[in-house]
Amino acid sequence: MPKPRADLQVVAYRVNARLRKGNIAAVPIYPFTTEWSELDRWPSVLLLLDSLRIRLPALYSDSRRKYESKYERPWYNRVTIPPSVLNSRFVGVSRKSPDYEWLLHADKDQRRAVGVIETSLGLKRRIYEVVRDLSHGQRQPIHVRLQYEDEKAKLETIRMKLRERLRQERAGLLILSDEEIEIAQLTSAQIGFRIEEIERILMDRAVRETRIASYARMSNLQLFLLAESLAEFKSSFARMPKINIAAVQRYLQGFLSDLALYGSREIRHNRNYAQNLIRRIIDNIGDLERAEITRLLNMAVEHLTRAASIMTGWADSLSEEEKLIVGLASLPGDV
Image 1 (cartoon, rainbow, N blue to C red):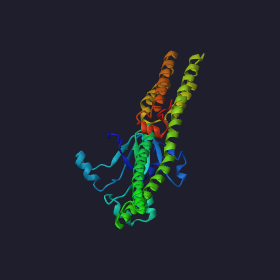
Image 2 (image 1 turned 30 degrees about the vertical axis):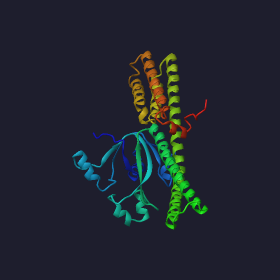
Image 3 (image 1 turned 90 degrees about the horizontal axis):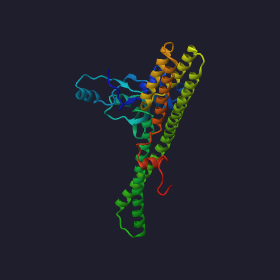
Image 4 (image 1 turned 45 degrees about the horizontal axis):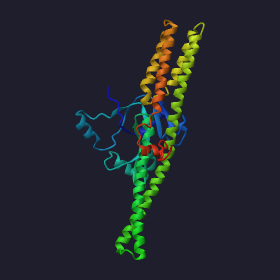
């Protein structure tokens, strides 16, 4: 059995083809809709609930050679994508891509069919990054945003220094050659274009970041509510004068169906433990004592509460600077 890969960048159109057929267990996070096939787009962010076994084309022409050299076995392009968050982005299509020549001669519709678009910077291919869980999915955009903010700050510093040199030159305080003036003006203009590009990127990513954070908070709250509901059911069950076996089984089956939607990696261990306890009750309810059923329900509640608590700690590993970006850190002097 191949190991799940947590570091994959997978070609998006292959995953979308599975979505179209309806044979993939996934919840769209952005856009948050189950009717993605009616949209003229595919989800930018997906929560993959079950492992996905899929055949993927090589992204680079030397992928086969590197694979066989590293693993000392013939090329095999079937991979297992573990339950995870799939976050889409575009990457450049270089001459190393095995389909580069075909894409150069393909028309717009052919390129779009394989998730490739043409930009001012060349061809771009849509991929899904495999992010291990919702906690990582919330942290990743913050890391990326900080990198863009750092780049923007450095570019602004360089541009201000160039403008200061040109200002001094115009005032007669500094002597620059025509070539130096032209280079300074050109560099300043290029920096301005890059800063505008960064601002557009940050605006585009802000909506996605907000959607992931909102979905994670909603999932966290719902897990707490599910744990609370099961605790209330446990109390009601303990007071039942006579156990209605069929009704209890139907309730717990419905509860399992709701619980199946929460598959993020950081909570999966506790969720699975709770599911197994509930299944044990459903399968053996006629043979178990009331006290034993109550004990098992109580254990399931504890595991669900623990899972919800784990999700609240998603920001613990962020640096103080990153926490400040998302408003999770106090400013100096704050009480």
